[in-house]
Image (tube, rainbow, N blue to C red; front, top):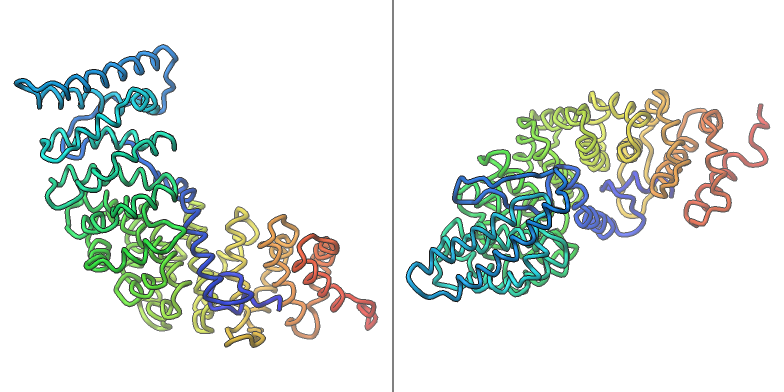
Length: 519
């Protein structure tokens, strides 16, 4: 039926298997989250401008376009730096180590200096093969650190430049081990995170070569910078679409405990990276979702939302909450029980986000609420009786399109009771009548007129609820008054069979030949 979406215990539009379709939607969110990371000011690949073990800061002209002459000089300097590194590597006399480190530092400075580092020039000059030699075991830590730093910034380049690092991957992974110093291991993790952030093919290479376990172990201690870098690299490595890596990560001994510990005690920056790990675990792995829900993670995520004003942190925290509630039937009951203080906290925190000036926060908060609204009657009542309702009704008519669509899921799901199996869902008349009287119908009819298929389906589904459920048979009149007939008739010859059938059936059933004769 048209209202099946609202009867599901998930936020997603479900027509067949609840678990498989909802899981697919969560995986789709995970795969496309690269764009969302850009929206949330978190880059999938990062240029290393300041060393992990020293305080020096190189000249930074980020944001300024380099004129051709300056770029040409930089490229010439890079070619010379690579040749000097080759010479230094071949030199075996007194002071050889200092000579190699000095040459590496010069190349690293050039690769860190501008918004458009001369990565292409370095790669063409053969820098990667030389840097791989500099990563050989037994080399001094300073040499290893500088070589890994150079490779990190090369990996931050375009796809072809990132893929050129393939020969370096085994050694970068090897230096993640316990025998490496923390600064060297961390810099290698940064380089691998950039590689993993490029595409699925490179992620698979890294997984085959064994990068996941040592990166996971780097999350276990409490060293802030190491945790941040390892968590960021892991979130890039497991982000799908294959759930295998997420399943493997959650099984690593100590990882779940470290997630709980870092969400509890870590600074906002570290907690942000750990929260992104939770985003992908909860989006891709049913096993991880179940384990996270049984731990203290849900409560910790709510605590972070209540106490933080960091946009970078709040976005992955909200997405994690939405994923967990969508992915585990017990998640809502873990934190949303009428009368409990934690429940009031959860609703108030989500209202806080709906009031935010940040579009992404509003969308993520609506996503979480839509999953709560798809739950039990008690959960629907929690939202319906809260301050959130006036905000949601306003957003349905005034917010950007993507937020309006999320809000439509919430309001629609509030109007039907959940059912078991394929039973036809029952309406919650009090909610439906109240929402229509408060003016939500025009917002849903506007969605019917949109070019977005999913939004149009949501609009049609709500129209069906109004036509069927408003008292005294007033539904058809209300829909007609808002030009709903005209909105549905645009689907008369629509290419989408489901929408065409749904719209035509509603028009025929409620506005057929006999419509209006009683008057």
